[in-house]
Length: 255
Ligand SMILES: NC(=O)c1ccc[n+]([C@@H]2O[C@H](COP(=O)([O-])OP(=O)(O)OC[C@H]3O[C@@H](n4cnc5c(N)ncnc54)[C@H](OP(=O)(O)O)[C@@H]3O)[C@@H](O)[C@H]2O)c1
Image 1 (cartoon, rainbow, N blue to C red):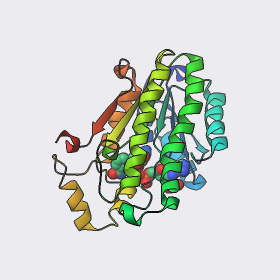
Image 2 (cartoon, rainbow, N blue to C red):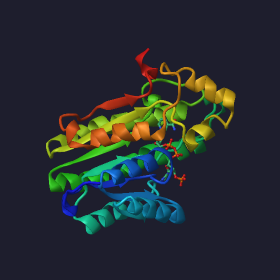
Image 3 (tube, rainbow, N blue to C red):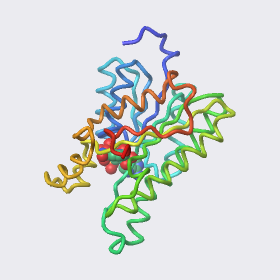
């Protein structure tokens, strides 16, 4: 636990924080003594996570927000600033795999569902976070991309396209934020052993082994291994890093 005065501890906002990578990131920040706002769409799970973080000694609260809804996102950022007076780090983690299928079998409804969360959600989050951070003269934003933001994947074109869009938003936001001292980067995980990976593979051990077997390090990541990269990019240690994508993929995109 940190010995920093409470008001010097970074204020960290995480979207889609109730499971997987978001949850692991919240726990990592809580262990550092950060002031953590966890956000999601399920109030009971959100309040339970906030209690868990407070039990670790963190100042933590849950705020409800569906990132597809601009009023939710505006309120989320406003309430964070009302509570703590500032926003130092934002982790735009909420995401969906949609309904993966070959393009010839895809439809506009799945396009909209995938892009509404992964692209509109990140755009709206960036918009409201940047307003605060630019006004206060600093901050760091980390978006969740994927190896699907780097390479194509048969059977997952809409998810792939949405994560490529996240990388475009990241680079452009970094250029806009730089003059105000705001850094914007993304993290691109390979397969991470979360609920999303379970859904993506339909829970099939063969499908899981097929994907993790293609990772040079020979395994899927634990959510905390992604959280550590997010915490690094959010921190002062990465103060000269902006507009970049950090692949945390066991070597998947090194080929
Ligand atoms: N797991 C992987 O292999 C992998 C690899 C590369 C990148 N990623 C990316 O990492 C991020 C986290 O994924 P994960 O693996 O931790 O999966 P996860 O456990 O399914 O987490 C995704 C979280 O986002 C939330 N969410 C979805 N749509 C939302 C919305 N419209 N508004 C607010 N919250 C929303 C979900 O909440 P609900 O429970 O309410 O749906 C869930 O808590 C995603 O952006 C994902 O694309 C994951």
